Image (cartoon, rainbow over all chains, first blue to last red; front, side, top):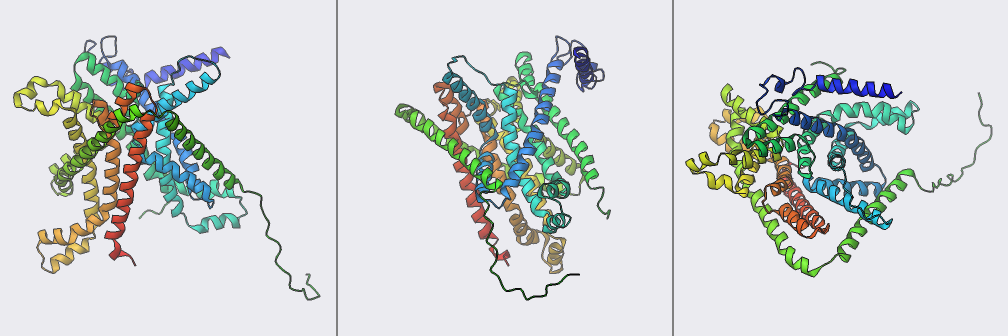
Length: 267
Length: 276
């Protein structure tokens, strides 16, 4: 069993290396001379920046499902007939769409730290506690993402005619089944362009976690810029990496969007 | 086949089934309860941690931070609006070259984080000190406020150009053709017919853009501009008092909510002739 796990780990590690666009066997930085500042060895910053790229991507990919599920629940709450549920969801979206993302990040980061510390103190522990920057960033970004996502999903909900729900009733489906089998497939199609926009924003917002010390693209290029005194070069490189991510996601999501529309009439 | 043989007397409706409490109501009361608890604990935090000395020391700093945020955002929005005009018209022009240049500009500034743009301008361009001194621009790139202003302006210009382009292109072709058939010159048709209709379409996205700028301007705190966020970080680094962030949240929420309501009122007022 242990052997299996380590083999899996090795496989994923090897895959991660082979598909690494910066420092992998076919990575961009593997072709620069080994004494350049972006090479992948000990001298260059290539490997550090490649690690930063992985952190940025994994943070965005970890935030996405949490944000979408949370946003879906909030959209459900906002269109529910129950007034108290509507009010609670309204407070949530008003607060987190009104606060700057940076402030939300600080509030989550320091707030969770202080809350856990005082909780520990209540039980008699007096140790300093530091919350994981990745986790704090994920929570803060999911909260922001979900409050925007709920608006996108809510307007998509409103675009679905009432007859679809009635059809579900007529077929004898329960409320959950109607939602999952009839409404959600249409909802995805309608909401996808809005969600693509939110994903692009999420990719850009991940840059903020560099401020609380997570080693993402911007943090790593910043360190490289400070040490090597080539600030302009490294920040241009950071911008290019973000642009490449945006370009790549717009291509991939373009395919997905076309795929969701495959049933529609071609005009 | 069955049928009733006797006439069924009219009966009162069955009593309404009283459900004790539905699941959604339960969830609603629970989440409202969580919000109330959170609000109460924040009030408790503020009341127990109230320190008049701190208030006297840091209160005025917050107000100056609000002023810095306000001026920075206003100047950048206006600068961005001016810069967005040539970009938007280049985007709509028939020239392939102008089109490519403006598209690249918009794509770059919308595709990269504002924070990276700010670093690029403040640290990146700032690293060319001798060259900047030679051309007499060092005073500009030395100052964090100017760098924040430049990056916010360039960023919002890209977004505003897209808003403007979308709005102008949303005006139906027939409006332009109608103006031409009435013999109205192109320029006058643009100012008197196309633009007023376009700006009504653009009103809501412009409001959103201003709100996004107010929120986005918080990142300039990272390069030592003392806006609301900057003063908050300063206060927190001196006092380690969590209230610093709560006050910043109150200020930002108040500004954004006020603006949102003012904008909604403005929109209702300006589009009242379109109501049916």
